[in-house]
Image (cartoon, rainbow, N blue to C red; front, side):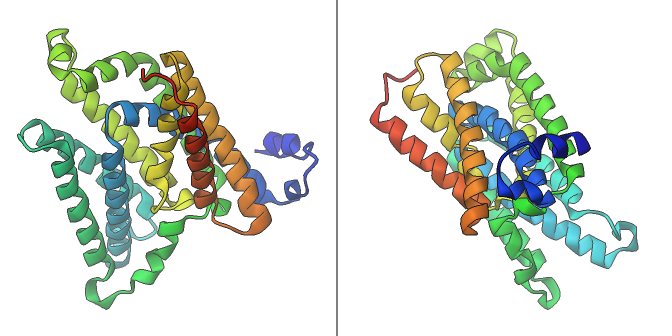
Length: 286
């Protein structure tokens, strides 16, 4: 981190004097490309509502972790985030199983899982007369409180997602467009979907406390949706999604610093503006 601090100090801005802004800036540089890459997969796989449901499951996992740490000595001192990660991954895998074994539409299954996760989370958060207000910070998020250890964790996750994207994107794309054809080509559709769902679950859970539960789904949808408006090929599609997420992340962080707004909300609004602009110049769909 010392090398990063030295490099940032070369920038001609007043905020470089604050360590929390240096950490937040690095976090944005890590998570923005991550959302940009995942967004193309979410949009093409038609899983935007699923990512929203994962946010709800992550909140439920946080509630479970908090309850366990206060009730059992075994979990005392354990970061509730790790419990939330395990719960969200289990939630994603269970969803993949149910979706494969039912004739119900995907949005119906997502609705069932999402509403159940929300209800369970609120139930656990208020269990025994507990107050829900201690979870309010999860709704808005605070990227200025990010820790260097978690930035390193997100950097590792970014590398894993890039590897997954390079190795499996074509299979994921074919699986989402034509599952039967993918099966006939020897692609294990279920495991492709399960692996992708688990990756989204981990990213949503870890970044939820930074960008906020209320807007995290937008970060997984807007970059890819905006890029799809103007991209003429797959190369442009992924590049525009990644660059738009990165630009909006930096602009949103600086906006939140100078005017005191939520960073997650500011990033989302920049992405929404970019989507509106690209919509006006949209080309023929890919």
